[in-house]
Amino acid sequence: MNKLNLQPGGHPLTIEDLSLMQQAYQDGFKAIGSMFLPSNYQAYIVSGCDPTFLSIGVVNISEGYVFYMGELWYVAAANS
Image (tube, rainbow, N blue to C red; front, top):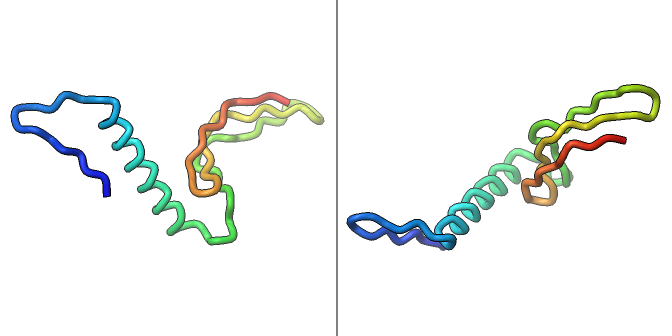
């Protein structure tokens, strides 16, 4: 278990502290995602990734987030 050791009178913020908080956020999101998604799901769109069909064969996809293989991924906007 990771612990954030705070000191009386203030605590200087370090990269290790930010890394610890980011890892805790990812672990929490992974736990929530695994509770709500069926075990046979490997990918799930959390937000965004909306397609806009411009014409036949031309699609724009907006940016968003995808829960894939137990991790949260950012997906940039794309044109095809």
